Amino acid sequence: MYEQYYGLRERPFDLSPNPRFLFLSKGHREALLHLRYGLTGRPGVTVLLGEAGTGKTTLVRAALQGANGHNVTIVHLSNPTLTRQEFYEYIASGFAFGLEAAASKSAFLRELERVLAARATDGGVLALIVDEAQSLPHELLEEIRLLTNTESNSRSVAVALVGQPELAARLNEPQLRQLKQRVALRCELPALDLHDTAAYIAARVRVAGGNADTLFTRAAVIAIHEHSRGIPRLTSVICDNALVSGFASDMKPVGRELVLEVCRDFELDRRPPDAGAAQPQAPAKPGAAEPQPLFSGLSRPRRFSFF
Image (cartoon, rainbow, N blue to C red; front, side, top):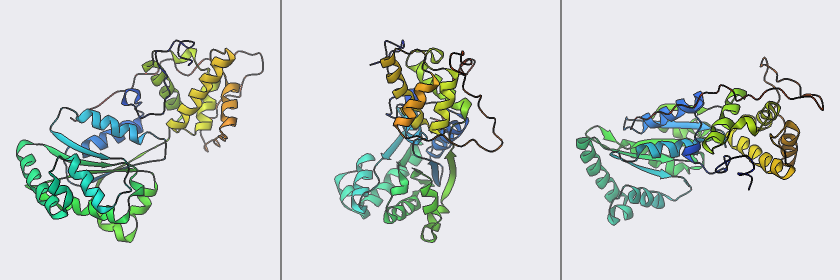
């Protein structure tokens, strides 16, 4: 819609979790390292926590993409509200077990032991990633714990639980203390600070073939950060709608007032400034030139792979 007007090959702020647009802040880089390390077959459960919209699913997609072509079989469960039977059917299908293993838990466990023994010989890994894990029924959390008990030649299923902060509260429940004791790696995704928000915007625009300096002013980026509270998904929503409005208004680059109009439409309140944090500059007076954009000198995000 607005791509040609802003010199873009594609829209940079679509909400689909596309690893091509993955931005690795320090916190995201650490989380991806934890996730990839946890999926290399080491014993224990990996837990990745983050508020809605912080990029957990995108990191999961990046980890899955990094595992392609290696001796790793990963089942990604993105909708965990299943019955016990459906859960085992889904995993059995993902691990390419036979129909008998999908229909019977005892047959599933026998097949799992057999495959783990074979993987111990060839160095392969079986792994399970559960997204939105805070929504797992209690009985499935217990089944996952029991699944990690299944070993053959010191090999077990690598498990990663990815969810919102409510997952941490659930793991603190007394009846789940045994599962919590299995957690070997734990990482939490923080919200982006102002610099990382600017870098996030610049990185996505760069992948889409554009230059963020020509799309948003410095004051606009500050407003985006304040109203998104550093949540990448909200940042993308604001940026996308601001570019649509800018295209309709023939405005290039998008300024602060247009961003504020979008935020009012979405009822996004400004985040109160953190105590002791540096305060952004006051908006320029009408008619005055806005300060220079934030994007100059931002480095490209680095990528890592354990696979």
